[in-house]
Length: 104
Image 1 (cartoon, rainbow, N blue to C red):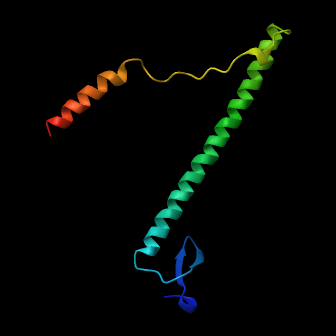
Image 2: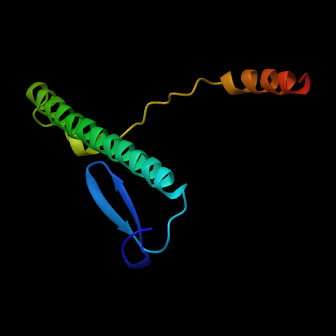
């Protein structure tokens, strides 16, 4: 138990106080949640860095395009997301997967 009926958790070099009594599993849960949050935060930072680079690349591409066609209206270019799915691939995978499930 901790201070004045509060549970405590020591992890990652910092002491954190949690209200209420803690069970034996609480420190493990808190550690796992802190680890997951750190991973997610890292993924967000990496995604933001990738987005910043993509914006710089787009600006560079726009400048290059304007070198060849100074009057081109870049704002008229519609964004187009790359279609990463392959047509028909899922319709071939799903029946095979479902068939394997029936044999189990």
